[in-house]
Length: 189
Image 1 (cartoon, one colour):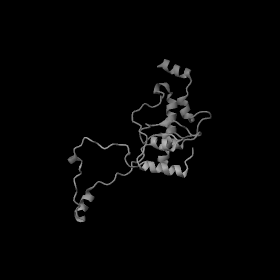
Image 2 (image 1 turned 120 degrees about the vertical axis):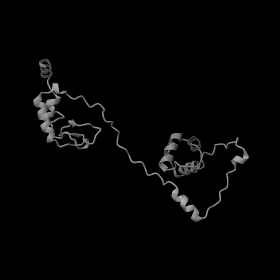
Image 3 (image 1 turned 90 degrees about the horizontal axis):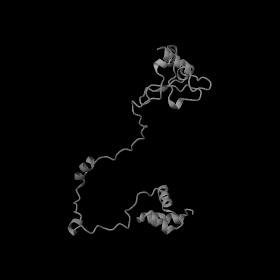
Image 4 (image 1 turned 90 degrees about the vertical axis):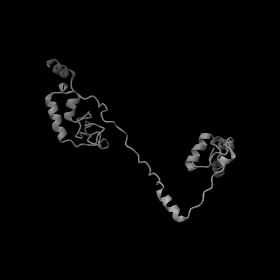
């Protein structure tokens, strides 16, 4: 089924009359309700009159159904009321994804698992780090995270990586330690 100009005009007319997508699909034939809804949105026809099949309420008394008549005010009196009316709301800007402070960070080696030399080397390297954002990282930059991701003071190291590893030499020494070295340090404490 293709949307010919004639079928599109039929859809627009029926949509303006308040027909449901199912009714329109049935009338057009060879098209589903969802196809009608999709075409309506692509044409920008989402605003329309109330559905035609909705019956009027019968249980209201006649005197309540009559709307009270309003008296038109002179232009001088109407202006202050218009000025007091609230302005239209501005569009809502897109929000950044919410990261709550205090969420657990990826497992980091504790101080007793890392040699003091490696820690001192990491601190010296982080003083000269490039402080890259996530979008600035490449396959050649160290991806060691520093700080809390929920804060503005979060960055990645950015130094040149060691071949085959995601981190620079100093961070590799902290991240990838042989099991025997860790076991030896725990036993000596």
